[in-house]
Image (cartoon, rainbow, N blue to C red):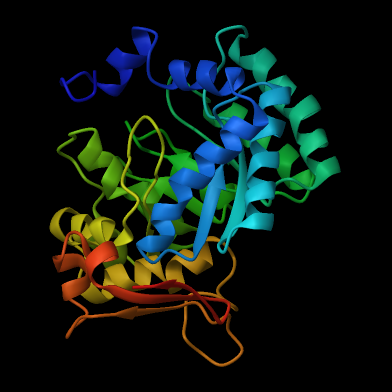
Length: 322
C-alpha cells in the first residue's frame, strides 16, 4: 500500500500500518521476535553503527511491551552492539481501549513493571493529534520520571502540536521528527538541553515534500542530531550514510553538521556524550575505518556501508573486517 501511494493515515484507517504491526507482534513468540530483531540489526553494524536506541511500542499491552523490552535486553547480552532501550507504550492507542483508559494502564501497570525489571532507560510518547495529547503525554512522562526513566518525545511530526514546548518543560533528552515545528517550538528547544533529532529517512519513505528544517534549527542555536527511525511502517533504511545524504540534500545541513549529528550530538541525545561520539582518550573505542579520500565520500557513495567500510571496531574489538 505504501509503494502504491497510500498515506500513513489511509493505511491505518484501512486496518493496516501500525495496527498490523501490533497484531503481528502480539502473535509472535519471544524467540521469533528475537531472531527477527537480530536479523534487522546486523545490517546496521555492517553500515558502521555501533550504538542504537531501540524502542518498544508495537505490543501496546503489558505482556507484549514487556516481551519487546526483554528481547532488547537479550540482544544487548548477545550482540556486539550497544542498545539503549526505550519504552514507547504510548505509540498508539490499541483498538481495545479508549485513550484515557490506556494512559492509565501505561502509568499504573506498564511503567511499574518496567521499573521492577529495569528494562528501559528512556520513556517516549507519540505526542500528536489522534494519538496522545499534551496533557496525556505530560502525565505519562511525569510518571516515567518518577521511576527514573528519561523522557523522549515524538514532536510536531504531522502538524505543530506544542510537543516541542512540552519537551523543554518535561526535560526530555530528545524531541524527534520536527517537520512542522513552529517558532515557539524552536525557541523552546534552543533555550534548553533538548536535542532536536531529525529523521529524514521517514520523510523520504513516506514521500512527504516537507522535510525538517535543520538549517533553521541550527541557525537558531538548536543542537541537532540525525537518526534512521528504522521501523516497519515509515522507514526501512538502516544506513546512516544514506540518512546523512538525505539530511544534506533536504534538511539544509552541511557535511560537518551531519557528522556531528550522527556522532557527538547523537550521543548527547542518549546522555552518553561523556563516553561516546568522539575519538578521544577515556572514551569508548568505537571506530570505523573507511576506504575513502575525503569525508564527503561517505554520504556520496549511497552504498557506502558495504563498499567503503574496511573495519568496524566496537569497544576496542574488531567486529567487521572487509
